[in-house]
Length: 388
Image (cartoon, rainbow, N blue to C red):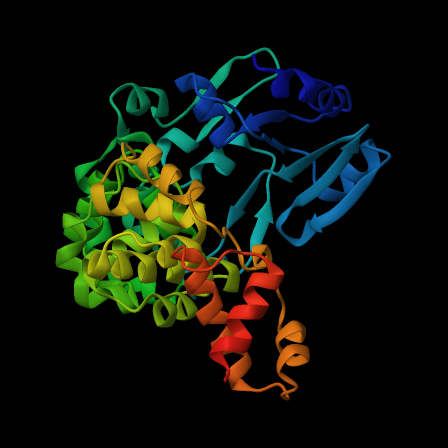
């Protein structure tokens, strides 16, 4: 067992010593069975929230209405969730109510896919009521129980199936895929924030091309608002050589000829991400129109320029070439320019205004193109001679 499981064993043992059942559950058990790295763990127990709080000295209520208590153990934190069943989902997002139970089986019945419906005790024994290990071995994503019921409980699970396909390269089981097709329109009930998180994970997966094919075939792509008009084009976009989510968004917008700012604002992305993606897209078109110039390299910087070269070529083989061009620049950032606006005002006895920015841009061009030395006195001579 990995270190994270070993570190959490005392939590499970304490619950068991007090008469309760406790198990590792969910994605960590799935990844353990698959031999993948474990990043975090979840623990489920037959103890009700108040009972968990009575067993441990340091706890925080983080979702107690849904049965989750945060237990603090030294510097570690563990989410402990009570076994539960759930009522109807009238909004396709969250249960109208939950009922705490003492049965592990009843708790696992509400999980989304068989590979996630695994539990493991502190000794490494895996409890598998729905043949999740067989599905993992066969590389199959299968809903627990009746697929339509799982997707009516939380419509985002349909998009999660595609996300797991992108991350793992598994195939979606026929009945599960059919249920996604039949319930795809329920994705409209899900908040854009939740959809964006899952879609970005799809783009970042190692098998994103396979997943995008399923996204289109299942009908989910037609329900992705701003992407709905382009769903048949999604499968043409290849993200294999790209690394960051900003690069992958940029590739998508370039291939589909979409305005990135308008799209990403509607998809609730951060201002920082929007700015980075816009820079990549704009730089791409600038290079497409004029090739690499000193001004383009200066305006966008090395990191963005390297990413754009990958977008353009689909590989990273020209990295040394771009780095070489950038290193030869006489200016690598605005801060490198030897003068400031106040210098221009002092030399010319003029008030500030639009002319100031225009003059700084002219000076920058002259320095970048080697016509003017980046020296304060040299620049002063040039300014005074060109302002006459």
